[in-house]
Image (cartoon, rainbow over all chains, first blue to last red; front, side):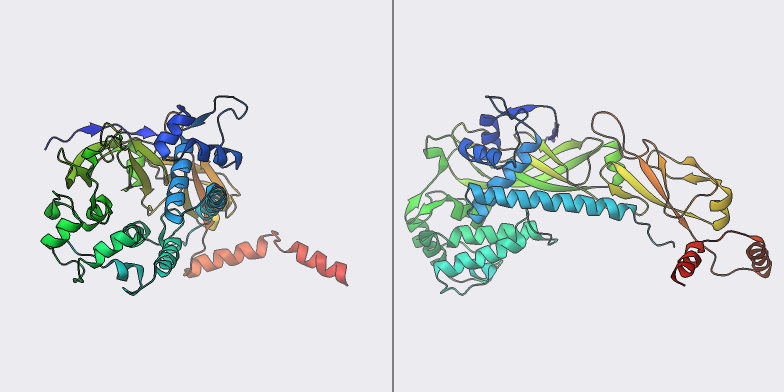
Length: 108
Length: 317
């Protein structure tokens, strides 16, 4: 079997995604994405722009939203609430990781 | 094809109502959903829970499952010709697919849903895999071989499990929890639908010396009391090789000495820092000569750590 080498893409790349592209990649509808934007869990690059574009990190959030929607049968408001809470948990975990990393270990 | 007991996976009786099945699924999903769970085997457990629920939540699929009969989990079996005639597709590769593929292909009682017959483009499924790498790999980048088996429809609309083997390069600067996207390496699309993507979820293995926080690294730096008081130069290991670190006189316990840009590289430019956290340790066993020297130090030192205790006592009296 021929084994090919495939390049990966950073998800935090400066590439901007249109609403349609984000919908296609995430599996959410454009209406659902608008609700996530209104709920402030997905923030467009320029919130004031008429044609909204999104950074690559929004893919991770949108895909998580789609999984939560499918697996827990959530509506848009449920997705917004779950994502906001997950975001808070991630923030707290990052703070905890940061503090733990600075705690001295046991001297052997 | 291996038999799976969907009822026991969901922890319900075979006679459970649809409401009981849904309730059991939700309870397990709360516990094992990979987006919310911290259980070590959450992803694998959730996959089988979702597979069981997807078959049992639909009364028609559930009836089809029940009619397969009860087998021992893991036992090889093939549906009877009657079952295949009633529920199965005309051509289904029973020996090359699994129960999840079979139930995913059933639309309902007596109906088949081979995708090649439809005209609507169906995008391929996206997949996520966790890739564990060592800190050294994050520092230099690393080529990893991925060996995935995905269900695919062949030209006759028959589902088969197809092995895919390919290599990909984890670029340097990947950090714990980061996701990388490998375009069009997920499931094959049907009827002109785009191929799915593959997402790599990076997990950095814990390191024996460094604690990792994003691109920054933390290292414990044990010092003797006299090294902390007088200052010293110590050799410190960093991912890019050893460096000599100057410890200034009067260094305190818990102080962080920063080795600028000696952490993990960032994806495009720059590096994180390495912080050496000072720990001052005293010897548990000392010689007579050392004891005498410490006694001499104690007698002659004017260093008073607890002056504020005495001040507080004077204020109270």
